Image (cartoon, rainbow, N blue to C red; front, side, top):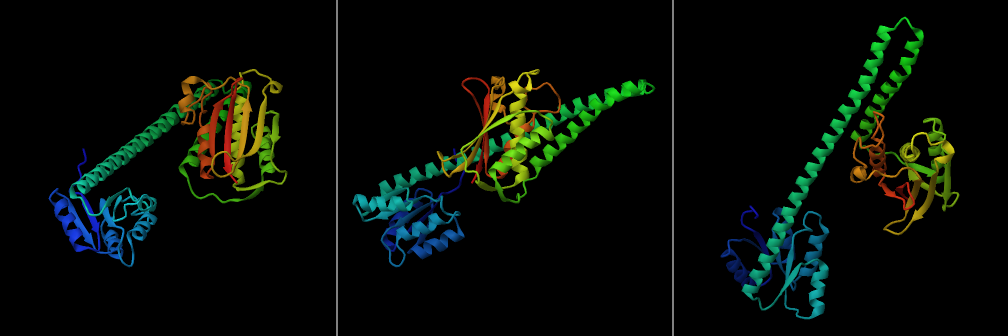
Length: 370
């Protein structure tokens, strides 16, 4: 049930008798009535106060109801105010003209006060439902944000505790066997790996925390793809052979941030590589990158499909695949790759989705505006 006070109705008509009739009828129903005698007055009043509903006469001198309605609908601050037209036109074309302008309903002259009251009450109830839905969406959004913060915090604590445990454990070994150079040497590598993973988590969190505008420049798509594969093989020392299948023109370019694009694509390639069972040889880790221009939905987009024939998506994490620290890997310090990849590509107004292949494995689909 709405907790709002008196509904505020703005009645706009150049005939004072019509305004007086409507004003008396609606005020008796505990509604607050504002009045205007032409379109200009209507716009001036709406600038000062926001009514819950406008009863707007179509036929008025200077600025008629259609033009007034169009002005209200072009302003983001007033476009959601429901408008009921009062019209002498009974033809289908006249009614459609009002609805096309943005009205939610219409009342024909001579005015039937009981019918008008019923239509006003209907629109006020719809407005209450709309507001309640918006409030519910806001509460749900707040809950999701709180849940995401909790997931990130818990994931950070869990991963850093595990990694610190690795460092402390090997430090204890060094303390107890500092006179054994071989043992010290063997302990340094896992300690170094653990510290590097902790540094990686902090960098990833910094990426999520900063949403500043990314500088864009024009780059050949072919070069971006080649650089991403080179990063996979050199920076991450993954000996994957990526089969590139392109339907793009050799000279096709996009406006993007090269660092963001390449690091995101590289994360998806790493994900494809790691989808294979441990011990699978490099030649058997088939990774295919298919590039094309997608025009099926909305504006044309660059679409990259990264497919593997790995173990597929665990059904237990299908719905939470992009949540922080969701992973099927046993190694600590993992689980942020897809989270970061989706976050960064969305900053470029792109998207990442994951689907299961019918014949096994998965396909990551990365889109980017042209």
